[in-house]
Image 1 (cartoon, rainbow, N blue to C red):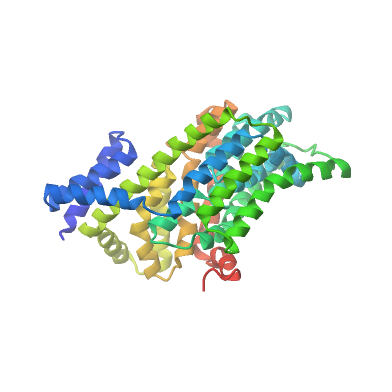
Image 2 (cartoon, rainbow, N blue to C red):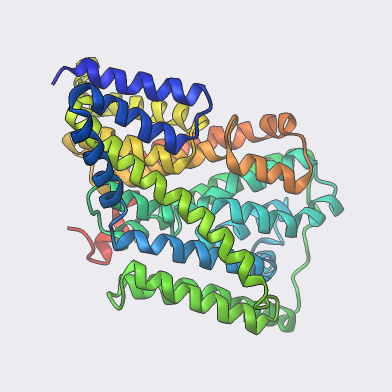
Length: 435
């Protein structure tokens, strides 16, 4: 097949994105037009329809709507406040205490909701008055919230890792979930280091909260245990082989719904709005998955992945150089494209190259997801950036300047994730999920 057809696919897709065509439509339409170039119209139409349907015909993908539903229930069910109080107990005594509380709360809430945007909104609303009371600069406070909220996309349960499992050809969801802990924690710790340095320099939070009494501490822990128990029940069950990721997602819905009712912070009438939001998010994600299946077939048929692989390997056959090239491309793509479509498009292109150079698929998953997580917090299309600014009321221009040190340190951490496979593979091997 003439590889110029593959170049047409890239050009058409880029043109549609430049014209502000919705990304799922751009993926499907550009792929279909290229298929018309190389196949009869009827054959191309039938093939595209088949790929659209079979792309979402996956039992693993059923976990996504249930995890989204569980996250929306927790976002509306008053769980964020209890996790913030628990985070205060853990790190509230440190200089720059509220910043560290925000970061740890995002890690905890992301771990139980699997959503960066939900964490930015729920935790951001909860800690914003604390930042203001302690005299923190609003731009810095927003940057702390925005930079740390994507850690929940690595710490399981993570819809992004489920999507990677499907698009990569069936990589173990359990292994991906376990592998996400260390990179996700490193993302949070990287943000804490930056927050600590800036807080010390500017004198933020020097009056760190005093240690609470034992009675108060026990009460905070007791209130947080049910929320944190979701992690133990769902992830423990998946790792232990008690149930699949999809079954675990269903249990997460029942658990979060029951917990919210016990807290009396969620009524049955709220469920209509929650279910509507879940249906909208799920519909968008599954249409993206289906559209990307058409593009994946079109790319394979036109030889585009091979063309890109040959080009990259012609530059160098050194894995260090190739992985740097991948990361630079993904960092740029992440600035203009949301995580899910970028993951769907570039996993089939880069993963064969990475595996050919000796990178384990689980290791590659951590690298690409960590990389694209940075894009969620950067302009011009960073969803967490806009949500964080809307919650705090800070101007985007000032937040962009404030978030640059966080992005710089996160890129350094990305290099460790890329070139130290142990960080991604230790836990899956310890639990016997990979060889």
